[in-house]
Image (cartoon, rainbow, N blue to C red; front, side, top):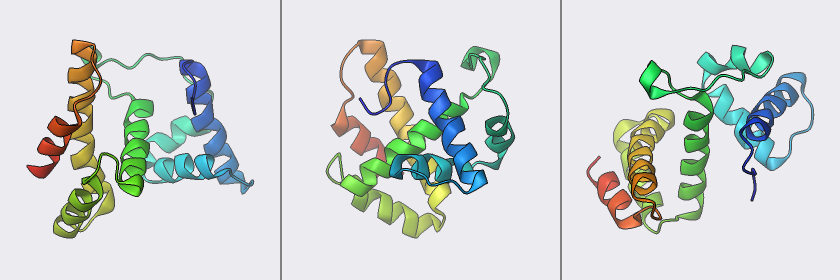
Length: 139
């Protein structure tokens, strides 16, 4: 696995990538992708500059989990780059042409991906790619 299953270890990757980025250190390709997502989210940059929060972010408390949010951005970028599921690159590019802003287009796709993952998790099944692509086509 590229990230591992440990929440603190995963979060530390974000902190390390951001610290390396702001100090001008050499970044691995994955660290560069993470730093780029953090650059796109100035609301998270101060948090990334401090000690790692041990906070659990829950929707019930009205909180957005910044690590989940940024992770979904990374997933979407990977999906578009590899066209997996097949067809997502064309759908994303058409959406981007219509919206004109990459970050905003990613947020639209992010909502579809999050819903698809939430459904799969609730049913304890793999995500339904056809349903995901169907949601994307409706954007």
